[in-house]
Image (tube, rainbow, N blue to C red):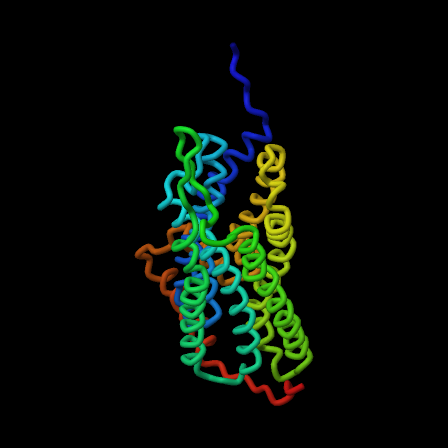
Length: 331
Protein backbone atom coordinates (compact mmCIF):
# COMPACT_ATOMS: atom_id res chain seq x y z
CA UNK A 1 0.00 0.00 0.00
CA UNK A 2 1.42 3.35 -1.04
CA UNK A 3 2.09 5.81 1.73
CA UNK A 4 0.11 9.03 1.68
CA UNK A 5 2.23 12.01 0.76
CA UNK A 6 1.88 15.05 3.05
CA UNK A 7 0.16 18.08 1.61
CA UNK A 8 1.92 21.34 0.87
CA UNK A 9 0.23 22.97 3.86
CA UNK A 10 1.47 20.22 6.17
CA UNK A 11 5.01 20.60 4.88
CA UNK A 12 4.89 24.36 5.40
CA UNK A 13 3.58 24.06 8.95
CA UNK A 14 6.13 21.33 9.67
CA UNK A 15 9.31 23.06 8.57
CA UNK A 16 8.37 26.70 9.07
CA UNK A 17 8.91 26.59 12.88
CA UNK A 18 12.32 24.96 12.39
CA UNK A 19 13.41 27.50 9.75
CA UNK A 20 12.06 30.35 11.88
CA UNK A 21 14.02 29.14 14.90
CA UNK A 22 17.29 28.82 12.97
CA UNK A 23 16.93 32.17 11.20
CA UNK A 24 15.91 34.04 14.35
CA UNK A 25 18.81 32.55 16.32
CA UNK A 26 21.34 33.85 13.79
CA UNK A 27 19.72 37.27 13.38
CA UNK A 28 19.19 37.89 17.10
CA UNK A 29 22.75 36.91 17.93
CA UNK A 30 23.83 39.40 15.27
CA UNK A 31 21.47 41.99 16.82
CA UNK A 32 23.00 41.53 20.27
CA UNK A 33 26.53 41.83 18.89
CA UNK A 34 25.71 45.03 17.00
CA UNK A 35 23.96 46.57 20.03
CA UNK A 36 27.11 46.06 22.08
CA UNK A 37 28.96 48.39 19.72
CA UNK A 38 30.37 51.61 21.12
CA UNK A 39 27.84 53.85 19.40
CA UNK A 40 24.99 52.14 21.31
CA UNK A 41 26.54 51.84 24.75
CA UNK A 42 25.45 55.29 25.90
CA UNK A 43 21.78 54.73 25.04
CA UNK A 44 19.91 53.21 27.99
CA UNK A 45 16.96 52.04 25.86
CA UNK A 46 19.27 49.69 23.94
CA UNK A 47 19.52 47.57 27.10
CA UNK A 48 15.89 46.54 26.66
CA UNK A 49 16.47 45.75 22.99
CA UNK A 50 19.36 43.43 23.87
CA UNK A 51 17.24 41.63 26.46
CA UNK A 52 14.28 41.36 24.07
CA UNK A 53 16.51 39.90 21.34
CA UNK A 54 17.74 37.22 23.75
CA UNK A 55 14.27 36.41 25.13
CA UNK A 56 12.65 36.27 21.67
CA UNK A 57 15.39 33.92 20.48
CA UNK A 58 14.84 31.55 23.42
CA UNK A 59 11.06 31.71 22.98
CA UNK A 60 11.23 29.95 19.63
CA UNK A 61 12.76 26.87 21.27
CA UNK A 62 9.54 26.21 23.20
CA UNK A 63 6.07 25.62 21.83
CA UNK A 64 7.14 26.85 18.41
CA UNK A 65 9.66 24.04 17.96
CA UNK A 66 7.16 21.55 19.41
CA UNK A 67 5.05 22.07 16.28
CA UNK A 68 7.95 20.75 14.19
CA UNK A 69 8.51 17.71 16.44
CA UNK A 70 4.80 16.93 16.52
CA UNK A 71 4.19 17.10 12.78
CA UNK A 72 7.52 15.55 11.77
CA UNK A 73 8.12 12.87 14.40
CA UNK A 74 4.76 12.55 16.15
CA UNK A 75 5.76 13.67 19.65
CA UNK A 76 6.00 16.84 21.71
CA UNK A 77 8.71 17.65 24.21
CA UNK A 78 6.01 18.81 26.58
CA UNK A 79 4.46 15.33 26.71
CA UNK A 80 7.52 13.09 26.87
CA UNK A 81 7.86 12.94 30.65
CA UNK A 82 6.40 14.67 33.67
CA UNK A 83 9.70 16.52 34.17
CA UNK A 84 9.83 17.76 30.56
CA UNK A 85 6.17 18.81 30.84
CA UNK A 86 6.81 20.86 33.98
CA UNK A 87 9.88 22.51 32.49
CA UNK A 88 8.24 23.23 29.13
CA UNK A 89 5.06 24.66 30.70
CA UNK A 90 7.01 26.92 33.04
CA UNK A 91 9.59 27.98 30.44
CA UNK A 92 7.03 28.90 27.77
CA UNK A 93 4.81 30.96 30.06
CA UNK A 94 7.78 32.65 31.68
CA UNK A 95 9.52 33.56 28.42
CA UNK A 96 6.42 34.83 26.59
CA UNK A 97 5.27 37.04 29.47
CA UNK A 98 8.81 38.36 29.99
CA UNK A 99 9.05 39.33 26.32
CA UNK A 100 5.83 41.35 26.54
CA UNK A 101 6.73 43.14 29.78
CA UNK A 102 10.22 44.03 28.58
CA UNK A 103 8.51 45.85 25.73
CA UNK A 104 6.25 47.60 28.23
CA UNK A 105 9.19 48.85 30.30
CA UNK A 106 10.96 49.91 27.10
CA UNK A 107 7.99 52.15 26.20
CA UNK A 108 7.74 53.54 29.74
CA UNK A 109 11.47 54.13 29.95
CA UNK A 110 11.48 55.82 26.56
CA UNK A 111 8.78 58.20 27.74
CA UNK A 112 10.72 58.94 30.93
CA UNK A 113 13.86 59.58 28.88
CA UNK A 114 12.06 62.07 26.65
CA UNK A 115 10.53 63.70 29.69
CA UNK A 116 13.96 64.08 31.30
CA UNK A 117 15.88 64.81 28.13
CA UNK A 118 17.86 67.67 29.63
CA UNK A 119 19.84 65.39 31.90
CA UNK A 120 23.49 65.17 30.86
CA UNK A 121 24.50 61.97 32.52
CA UNK A 122 22.76 58.68 31.71
CA UNK A 123 24.23 56.66 34.57
CA UNK A 124 20.94 56.66 36.49
CA UNK A 125 19.02 55.68 33.37
CA UNK A 126 21.32 52.68 32.84
CA UNK A 127 20.75 51.60 36.43
CA UNK A 128 17.02 51.97 35.95
CA UNK A 129 17.13 49.73 32.88
CA UNK A 130 19.10 47.02 34.68
CA UNK A 131 16.74 47.17 37.66
CA UNK A 132 13.58 46.91 35.52
CA UNK A 133 14.96 44.00 33.48
CA UNK A 134 15.89 42.11 36.65
CA UNK A 135 12.55 43.03 38.25
CA UNK A 136 10.71 41.67 35.19
CA UNK A 137 12.48 38.32 35.21
CA UNK A 138 12.12 37.83 38.97
CA UNK A 139 8.48 38.95 39.04
CA UNK A 140 7.38 36.76 36.11
CA UNK A 141 9.34 33.82 37.54
CA UNK A 142 7.50 34.09 40.85
CA UNK A 143 4.08 34.52 39.23
CA UNK A 144 4.52 31.29 37.26
CA UNK A 145 6.24 29.36 40.06
CA UNK A 146 3.12 27.28 40.74
CA UNK A 147 3.35 25.68 37.28
CA UNK A 148 6.38 23.41 37.86
CA UNK A 149 5.06 22.57 41.34
CA UNK A 150 1.43 21.63 40.62
CA UNK A 151 1.11 21.14 36.85
CA UNK A 152 1.68 17.97 34.82
CA UNK A 153 1.04 14.43 35.94
CA UNK A 154 1.17 10.88 34.56
CA UNK A 155 -1.90 8.69 34.13
CA UNK A 156 -2.56 5.25 32.69
CA UNK A 157 -4.84 4.28 29.84
CA UNK A 158 -4.57 0.51 29.58
CA UNK A 159 -0.87 -0.28 29.35
CA UNK A 160 0.02 3.17 28.00
CA UNK A 161 1.35 6.00 30.17
CA UNK A 162 0.21 9.48 29.18
CA UNK A 163 1.19 12.93 30.41
CA UNK A 164 -1.50 15.40 31.45
CA UNK A 165 -0.63 19.09 31.21
CA UNK A 166 -3.19 20.18 33.78
CA UNK A 167 -3.13 19.79 37.53
CA UNK A 168 -4.56 17.19 39.92
CA UNK A 169 -5.05 19.78 42.66
CA UNK A 170 -7.08 22.50 40.93
CA UNK A 171 -8.47 23.41 37.53
CA UNK A 172 -5.42 24.88 35.82
CA UNK A 173 -6.87 25.27 32.32
CA UNK A 174 -8.55 27.29 30.93
CA UNK A 175 -8.23 29.51 34.03
CA UNK A 176 -4.51 30.02 33.55
CA UNK A 177 -5.07 30.73 29.86
CA UNK A 178 -7.15 33.75 30.85
CA UNK A 179 -4.50 34.94 33.31
CA UNK A 180 -1.77 34.42 30.74
CA UNK A 181 -3.82 36.38 28.20
CA UNK A 182 -3.93 39.31 30.60
CA UNK A 183 -0.24 39.08 31.51
CA UNK A 184 1.04 38.54 27.98
CA UNK A 185 -1.30 40.59 25.86
CA UNK A 186 -4.08 42.72 27.36
CA UNK A 187 -2.28 44.59 30.17
CA UNK A 188 1.01 45.00 28.24
CA UNK A 189 -0.79 46.29 25.16
CA UNK A 190 -2.84 48.83 27.14
CA UNK A 191 0.31 50.16 28.83
CA UNK A 192 2.28 50.23 25.58
CA UNK A 193 -0.56 52.02 23.82
CA UNK A 194 -0.82 54.70 26.53
CA UNK A 195 2.89 55.43 26.69
CA UNK A 196 3.29 55.33 22.92
CA UNK A 197 0.64 58.07 22.68
CA UNK A 198 2.72 60.09 25.16
CA UNK A 199 5.90 59.38 23.16
CA UNK A 200 4.25 60.60 19.95
CA UNK A 201 3.08 63.73 21.78
CA UNK A 202 6.62 64.51 22.92
CA UNK A 203 8.08 63.88 19.48
CA UNK A 204 5.59 66.34 18.00
CA UNK A 205 6.54 68.91 20.63
CA UNK A 206 10.24 68.34 20.00
CA UNK A 207 9.74 68.80 16.28
CA UNK A 208 7.86 72.07 16.78
CA UNK A 209 10.44 73.52 19.18
CA UNK A 210 13.20 75.36 17.40
CA UNK A 211 15.75 74.86 20.20
CA UNK A 212 15.46 71.09 19.85
CA UNK A 213 15.59 70.68 16.09
CA UNK A 214 19.11 69.23 16.17
CA UNK A 215 18.08 66.53 18.64
CA UNK A 216 14.87 65.56 16.87
CA UNK A 217 16.52 62.85 14.77
CA UNK A 218 18.31 61.43 17.79
CA UNK A 219 15.14 60.97 19.79
CA UNK A 220 12.87 59.84 16.96
CA UNK A 221 15.43 57.26 15.76
CA UNK A 222 14.94 55.20 18.91
CA UNK A 223 11.23 55.95 19.29
CA UNK A 224 10.20 54.84 15.79
CA UNK A 225 11.15 51.14 16.20
CA UNK A 226 9.40 51.13 19.59
CA UNK A 227 6.19 52.49 18.04
CA UNK A 228 6.38 50.07 15.11
CA UNK A 229 7.03 47.11 17.42
CA UNK A 230 3.95 47.98 19.50
CA UNK A 231 1.76 48.18 16.40
CA UNK A 232 2.96 44.76 15.21
CA UNK A 233 2.49 43.37 18.72
CA UNK A 234 -1.19 44.30 18.56
CA UNK A 235 -2.05 42.84 15.16
CA UNK A 236 0.14 39.69 15.32
CA UNK A 237 -0.17 38.44 18.92
CA UNK A 238 -3.70 39.44 19.97
CA UNK A 239 -5.68 36.99 17.73
CA UNK A 240 -3.63 33.91 18.78
CA UNK A 241 -3.77 34.88 22.46
CA UNK A 242 -7.56 35.36 22.39
CA UNK A 243 -8.13 32.16 20.45
CA UNK A 244 -6.05 30.00 22.80
CA UNK A 245 -7.75 31.49 25.85
CA UNK A 246 -11.42 31.39 24.85
CA UNK A 247 -11.46 28.52 22.35
CA UNK A 248 -9.27 26.06 24.20
CA UNK A 249 -11.65 23.11 23.78
CA UNK A 250 -12.03 23.59 20.02
CA UNK A 251 -8.27 23.25 19.46
CA UNK A 252 -8.52 19.56 20.32
CA UNK A 253 -10.11 18.71 16.99
CA UNK A 254 -7.82 17.60 14.20
CA UNK A 255 -8.89 20.44 11.89
CA UNK A 256 -7.93 23.16 14.37
CA UNK A 257 -4.72 21.45 15.44
CA UNK A 258 -3.36 21.10 11.93
CA UNK A 259 -4.59 24.31 10.33
CA UNK A 260 -5.79 27.17 12.48
CA UNK A 261 -3.67 26.37 15.54
CA UNK A 262 -0.46 26.15 13.51
CA UNK A 263 -1.35 29.23 11.48
CA UNK A 264 -1.98 31.43 14.52
CA UNK A 265 1.11 30.15 16.28
CA UNK A 266 3.17 30.86 13.17
CA UNK A 267 1.92 34.46 13.10
CA UNK A 268 2.65 34.91 16.81
CA UNK A 269 6.19 33.56 16.66
CA UNK A 270 6.89 35.41 13.43
CA UNK A 271 6.33 38.65 15.35
CA UNK A 272 8.97 37.64 17.88
CA UNK A 273 11.36 37.08 14.96
CA UNK A 274 10.99 40.54 13.43
CA UNK A 275 13.16 42.59 15.80
CA UNK A 276 16.20 42.45 13.54
CA UNK A 277 14.24 43.65 10.51
CA UNK A 278 12.50 46.43 12.47
CA UNK A 279 15.84 47.74 13.75
CA UNK A 280 17.47 47.33 10.34
CA UNK A 281 14.77 49.38 8.60
CA UNK A 282 14.38 52.13 11.20
CA UNK A 283 17.79 52.58 12.89
CA UNK A 284 20.54 54.00 10.71
CA UNK A 285 23.29 53.25 13.23
CA UNK A 286 22.12 49.65 13.56
CA UNK A 287 22.06 49.21 9.79
CA UNK A 288 25.57 50.61 9.49
CA UNK A 289 26.74 48.38 12.33
CA UNK A 290 25.40 45.31 10.53
CA UNK A 291 27.16 46.32 7.32
CA UNK A 292 30.43 46.86 9.16
CA UNK A 293 30.15 43.50 10.88
CA UNK A 294 29.26 41.56 7.73
CA UNK A 295 31.86 43.25 5.55
CA UNK A 296 34.62 42.34 8.00
CA UNK A 297 36.08 45.82 8.27
CA UNK A 298 38.10 44.92 11.33
CA UNK A 299 41.26 44.90 9.25
CA UNK A 300 44.59 46.50 9.87
CA UNK A 301 44.22 49.32 7.38
CA UNK A 302 45.36 52.56 8.93
CA UNK A 303 43.34 55.34 7.36
CA UNK A 304 39.93 53.74 6.77
CA UNK A 305 39.95 52.09 10.17
CA UNK A 306 40.99 55.29 11.85
CA UNK A 307 38.26 57.27 10.13
CA UNK A 308 35.66 54.67 11.04
CA UNK A 309 36.84 54.56 14.63
CA UNK A 310 36.74 58.34 14.92
CA UNK A 311 33.24 58.47 13.51
CA UNK A 312 31.98 55.86 15.95
CA UNK A 313 33.64 57.55 18.91
CA UNK A 314 32.20 60.94 17.91
CA UNK A 315 28.68 59.51 17.74
CA UNK A 316 29.03 57.71 21.06
CA UNK A 317 30.39 60.83 22.77
CA UNK A 318 27.58 62.92 21.30
CA UNK A 319 24.92 60.63 22.75
CA UNK A 320 26.73 60.62 26.07
CA UNK A 321 27.47 64.31 26.60
CA UNK A 322 25.02 66.29 24.53
CA UNK A 323 22.89 68.55 26.71
CA UNK A 324 19.52 69.59 25.41
CA UNK A 325 17.43 72.47 26.74
CA UNK A 326 13.81 71.70 27.36
CA UNK A 327 12.52 75.07 28.43
CA UNK A 328 9.60 75.12 26.05
CA UNK A 329 8.49 71.51 26.46
CA UNK A 330 6.53 71.68 29.66
CA UNK A 331 3.01 71.11 28.53
